[in-house]
Image (cartoon, rainbow, N blue to C red; front, side, top):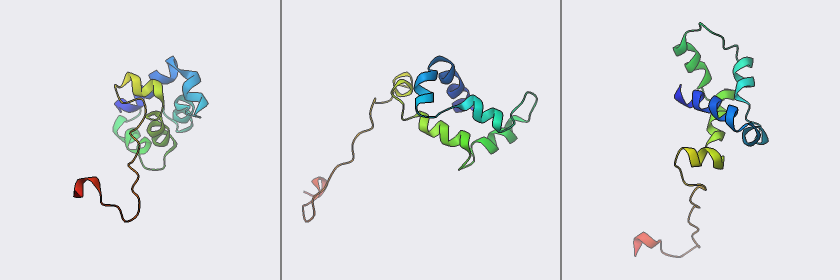
Length: 93
C-alpha cells in the first residue's frame, strides 16, 4: 500500500514526469472504483494483482529518474554484461 501512496504523492509533485510516461495513478485509481471507506486489504489485493493498470504503473514508476533519485536508487539500471560466444566467463577464470 505504501507504493501506491508514494506513487500518488509523486504524481502530485512531478505530474509532467509521470504523465510523459503515461503514468496517471489518480485516474487509474478512480477507474478502479476506489473510494473512501473501502476495505483496504481487498483494495490492495485487487490493485497489486498482476496485470492491473495500477500495478503496472507502479512498476513503471521505478524507471523514472526523479523517483530513483528520491528512493536513493541508481539513476540508471546497471547494464547487463555482454558475452561473446566461445569466450570464458569472467568468474570462470
